[in-house]
Image 1: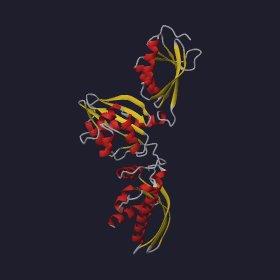
Image 2: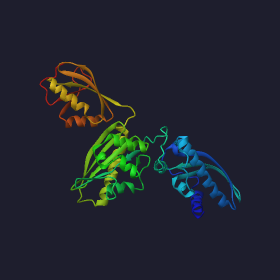
Image 3: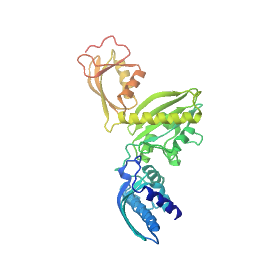
Image 4: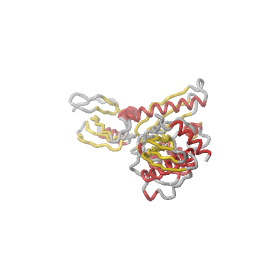
Length: 361
């Protein structure tokens, strides 16, 4: 009861204020919760009313985000429930010496609720999808050893302990036994899409960021962006001068880089619809055309290649991509495939393997 009274004091002072930084996820906001409670004093009545409102809102929330059969056995103590509540907004209230009547809005912390539900082996309804959040999988490379969930991975610990993480944009997994079984450090480093999908499904999100931090002189950061379709982008590598930054400052700086780059990429790289890229491919010989085809279909982020027209020296194709155009073109350059702007009479960019003697239609 003492903890409830402390909580009550906080609510009394801030009852008309809602923090503007709260996670704007309406799925986790329960409005119009009515309470009518009596107690030995006004203070006790209010405390009981707040506890009753939280309990009502919690039950309504479970009905909203879980299939009905899944809500059984998800009971919480008042103390546990307190940790899920982010804010209580008073819509209206009336009080007397022994009675409290009110209409309240309860804001729950989506990340806290989701982690609790996941830990109970329950599945959040597919209609409630935190589509904006990206789950962070921090991989550390130390002397050629790959670390992820290990306690001696300071990169993982830094993310796990970060208090001011924007929960609307980023989600840090629990790192429990099921996470370990679903995604190993090697899987994360190699971008094993089946393992990645298991984590995305478990945490009910469709985006993953794998920031890989290489310890060394200098230290280096690589950031990979995944969706359920596969790799969607890879950010440019960032190097850090270890002579300038202390180890703890270095990790904080790297985290800021990840969040800044990832928020930018989320606006440009991830789309709800596949991206179709059109190219005209030039080649001199049939083996050259086969080599080009092989390279194109094996590009990361390419789901399908369609050949629309094929002649003796060129082909018109399209690539169905889950990755950004920039990422696809960077891979083409790496593989030695030249990209040119559309030629006269063509509307698509042109591709060729090295230098071609001619590009005649």
